[in-house]
Length: 334
Ligand code: KG4
Ligand code: ZN
Image (cartoon, rainbow, N blue to C red; front, top):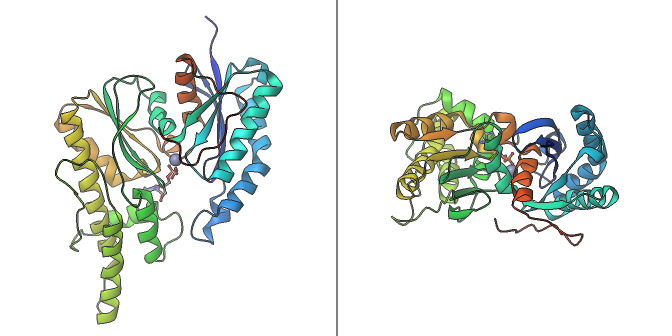
């Protein structure tokens, strides 16, 4: 049979990305244009700036992807695009670009969910083995998702306040580290001792939900109190203590859900999956239970369009088609 080529477009936050995936498994092209530098001096993503960058970058990134893949639009079977969740103005650029391409080249259009994309990044490195459990940790999301088969997503737990990455970024900001702060905290944590007592938000005994705003506040309070008393706090120790609390809860809930749902495989996904401490702790815990853990390489953990084209391939084969009325949906449910 002829190879299937899906073009994916991602613009939900601050990366303008286009990729081409062959047969739902193989990267033919993968271009990501990051705007982090433009947002850094504001300490976070500024929605208006993000939208403007997407407009400027979209055609450049698209051309680059087609060139890298050595293909033309005529070779593409379908166009997948992130329809949500994310920043509405940013999403709209991707959705409208995808619609224009689909209309101009008469190609099927498939709107996909950003988090489903993060999960399916794993399909680029391993065969999915259902039923499975995915821990999705990013700047906007913290979710435990149960999948009994392709295209079926059941959120069994989610954050009630801050996402993990958001908590990392806010703690980093308090420590006067540049945005995004996650990688800096991760590096500092490796050099410190988790000697400062911080809370663990386990919530109700049977809940798979998460909460990180209390922990974030505890870190900020610890710093303020020490400052007032003129005491010295070793930033590395605070980072290590914060990271230990985050990891203990994330890994603890994931392993409990893994057992209760009797899954074959655990997937880690999202930008915080880059965290070295989390990767190591989850690997050890899953190994101990004799299960299989998949973690994508760093470049596929952060926002990219390869993951969007991959989930697009799955949804396309399942028969999903979007019309020309496809719209950006910032609060889209998975
Ligand atoms: O998935 P992603 O690229 O964008 C969203 O969809 O949110 O995730 C970005 C988030 C940021 O909050 C960033 O600080 C965090 O992932 N992050 C990390 C690490 N690398 C990136 N957090 C902790 N440790 C890291 N090594
Ligand atoms: Zn993301």
